[in-house]
Length: 173
Image (cartoon, rainbow, N blue to C red; front, side, top):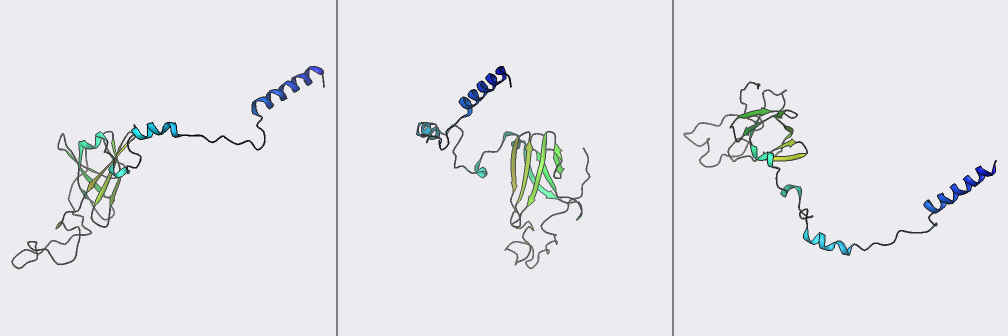
């Protein structure tokens, strides 16, 4: 080995030891975050304890009203009936379909009759809820309430399948 190479190697070892050398057993000093408490007290990004359910909906979701759900056939996907508030246009959309830049991400029907519609535009996500109304056929079984069909002199209720009312329609733009 030449003397130039050994000098270079010695300098390289000295630089490596100076930059990356940490004594064994050295620990990170304990940090005091109390100086940041004023920022946390002011809550510039909203309350930390707020749940996502209570979070305000994005602005694009005010353009739509979740009207109902439909299904063309048993082997067909569930469709959301969505009304555009400004034009009063009604759209029938399945999961994955779009209304302009807004995409229908999920249509979820719960056992209690409520239905959840998740919409997404860019990075914003909005959830629209459709609550089951009493007497809408969403809760089959049980005696009819007073004033409901089924009392003497009134027409019997129409049978429904799982609370979904079939509405004939044609897809198209």
